[in-house]
Amino acid sequence: AQSVTQPDIHITVSEGASLELRCNYSYGATPYLFWYVQSPGQGLQLLLKYFSGDTLVQGIKGFEAEFKRSQSSFNLRKPSVHWSDAAEYFCAVGAPGGGNKLTFGTGTQLKVEL
Amino acid sequence: ETGVTQTPRHLVMGMTNKKSLKCEQHLGHNAMYWYKQSAKKPLELMFVYSLEERVENNSVPSRFSPECPNSSHLFLHLHTLQPEDSALYLCASSQLPTSRGTGELFFGEGSRLTVL
Image (cartoon, rainbow over the protein chains, first blue to last red):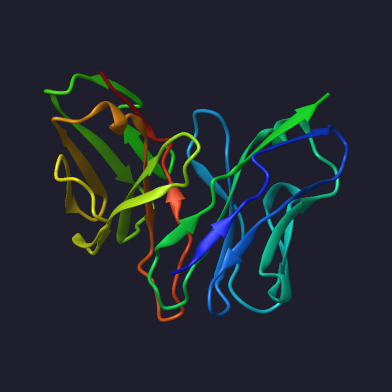
C-alpha cells in the first residue's frame, strides 16, 4: 500500500521569499503524484500532478514540483511567495492501475508574513 | 457555477437525528467520492462510485449510507452519528480511471458537520 509523509506541519515564510514544501512517499514503483491546496473554508484545488516524463512539473499559481525517484520525494516549490499563498497544502499519491484512489498526507499549513 | 457543489455547507445535528449531505457535479464526470477530513489526520476515502455503482467502501460504519442516483448527484445519509464523526466531509468527482490509472479529482467546498 502507498503512503505519504509531509514532515512539516507548519511553515512560515516572508512574502517574496522562496518556498519548499516537502513530500515523501512510499510505493513499490513509480506512483502518480499530486499537490493540492486548500484555503480556509474551501475544498481542495489541484496545483500540479506527475504521471510520467519530465520530472520537473509546472503547475498553477507559479508552483512547481520535482519528482526524485532516488529520494522518493515530490517537493513543492515556489520562487517568490505571495500573501495569498497562505493555505494548507496536501501531497497525494496514486497507484498506476489502482483506480482513482488517492492517499493524502496530513498537510502542511503555510503562513506568509508581510 | 462551481464544478462540484455541496450542501449544506454547515450542519449541526444531535446523535439521534437523521440528515443528508448532498453533492452535485457539473463537470460531466462519471465517478464520485466521499472523503472525510478530520483535524490533524489525512483525508480518509469513504466511498467511491463509478458509473453510479459503489466500487469502494473503506470500512465505513453503517451509520453513513451513500446514495448515487445518477452520475451528477451523490448523497451521504447520516443516522445516529457519534461526536467523533464531526468533521469536514468533502465530495469529489473525476473521470473514470483509465488503464493508466488515476485521474484528477475535483473537490467541492465541503460540508462541515458537528455532532452534539
